Amino acid sequence: MQIVAPFELEGNIMRSLGTDWMLVTAGNEEKYNTMTASWGGMGILWNKSVVFIFIRPQRYTYEFIENNEYFSLSFFGKNWARALKFCGTNSGRDVNKAKVTGLTPVFEEKAPYFEQANTVVICRKMYSQDMNPESIIDQSVMQYYHGNDYHRIYVGEMTRVLLHDE
Image (cartoon, rainbow, N blue to C red; front, side, top):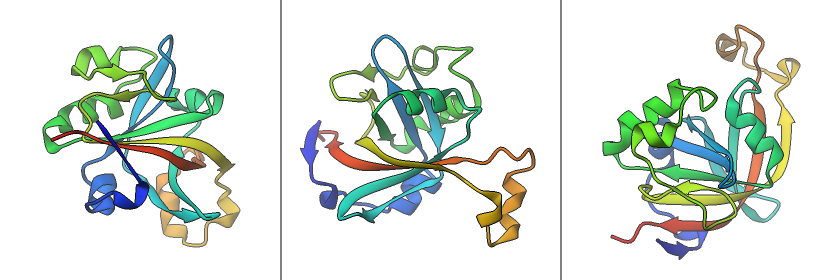
């Protein structure tokens, strides 16, 4: 993997997040978890390159994000769609996702990521806040919260971007 600046990221972030998905991972070599996510974004906030992710409190990954300063976002090619689907529909409480999917965790950064990823973003938590239903202006989005299971929003500074060597 080669290190690049966040501004050197290429490609369509909308497709990467919304269609191709990503794995959000936090923890350490002793204990970590990952989950598939398709909601998020990248941008500039407080004069820093940042990511925005959304995690529901009942997700196993939530406790790892909460208890660690860093997390990673791993992006893959289409050939890993089946693995990402598995990671999004099975809990790390019940199954070793890496073992089942063939993904190889790497622990050389401040947050684990996966060797097979074509792009990895290491992030330092800067901000978190629970979504407040009273703040939702467009009521059509309430369809995503039947159980009042509102996401926690995290803003993370992009501290390192890794691109897979071609």
